[in-house]
Image (cartoon, rainbow, N blue to C red; front, side):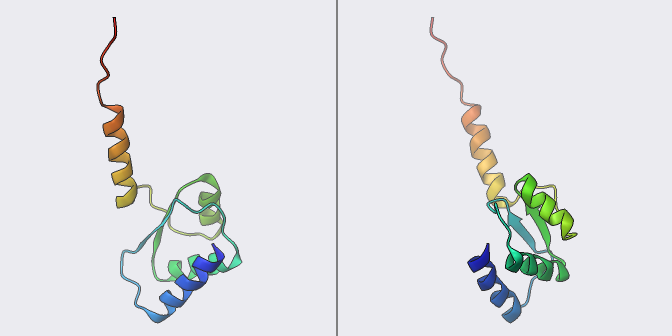
Length: 94
C-alpha cells in the first residue's frame, strides 16, 4: 500500500474529503505503516471502509475503522455479472 498511500495522503491533504466517503479496500492484501496513517486520517474525516478479506477486516478492527457491510458499486457490477453467468441455462444432453 506504500506508494499508493503516499499519493493518496497528498491528495487528502490538498483536497476536501467528501461527506459519506466509502473507501474500497477489497483489492488490498497488505497495509504498511504509511497505509495505516492514511486509513486513520480518512477515518478522522468520517470515511467508512469496505474490507475485502479477513486480513484487512482485522486491520480495520485494530485501527477502529468504521466498516460497511455492503458492496461498492464496482463490486455490485462484478456480482451482477457473476450472477448472470451462473443463471445461464445449460442445455441437457441425452
